[in-house]
Image 1 (cartoon, rainbow, N blue to C red):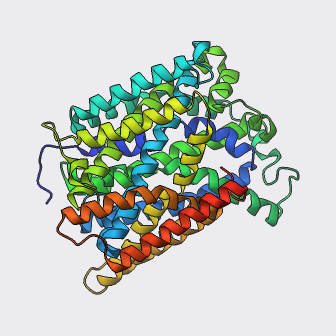
Image 2: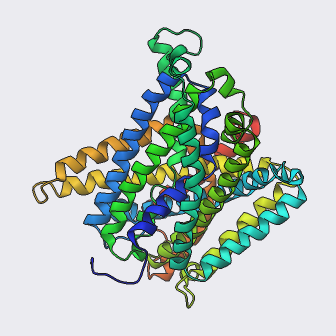
Image 3: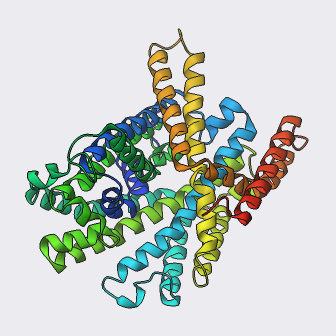
Length: 473
């Protein structure tokens, strides 16, 4: 399984993890955290989130190594809990993946607006036209070959890390310990108050969890790796790189400005913070870095949803036509279907942000559901292998911690988002049933019909709650 072949190498896989995760979030996280927490609480939150995400990454790495026959992150749900679970995991992952690209479009154009004010809103006709051209260009690049796109992504990742490195170095040079420790534990009081600090930590966790979406990039693309084992290594190395970048980028500013000053910065906060540090050139450097960063993440998230549909089609979770590869082994139909949906949402921004806000809200929890299935299968597989593999108990513990972390995370984010996810799965059930018939099955099984009815009822309930204002997006 590990012999060399044409495909994506270790460095490119690490770059995929880093690039998929680092989009626009790291450039805004300074102000996002400062608006809810003091530096002491931020440190505690990073310890909790870093440990939880590390356990998830360890679980992914273990499963990639131990079950190299399973391709695609959703395959763990299918293997452990049946094809319908695989569909739920894969469909939710696909939705979450491409909807994030709509956010990349608006944020990137707003960043270009730092140099060209006509694009500053990110939602006018000029911004949407340019963003549409970029989106289709990235789709055509990936359609010419995923491996080639991964090499390009590696170059873009290096370019995006340079401005972040410069920001961190300057942040270290300008760091003042007395500012950092002045209001270390509380928004109001300098003394430690457990209840207040824990409330801040909770708010931080909600912000921090989402900046690691994409850490599964190498595991998702493991079928295209030169060596399957490289995907597991890349997941861990990529995560450790992300943790270092995120922790430094979010904590160093507390030693330059007070929490109140950081919280008032315009978004993306890093642009205006670096402008304050070294002048207008600083804002320009970070704006360029942000544009490159978004392009890199956008390229990664153009590859991942297409790859998801292709792998799902191979396992009869969506119709075969969704994943039919072209001569470059790229899933043309999946790529262009996904891009067409992105285009619809981008154009909707001309008239209202409600459609996008609604769709994005109902899918924010979907990727956590995918992570929960990964952790749950890690637990199940490790339990099955107890006594057969030396590290089975250790891996079982890793999986349990990851599972608890993700379940708590979705509860903190709000169970209303989980309820909204039901809406996103309703159209997918039709394609799942069609795929099962294509694969020689007699449509949905009795338990799958029961689960489908449950999802439809949940979708109807969530729509009613939306209409009456109980659920807000």
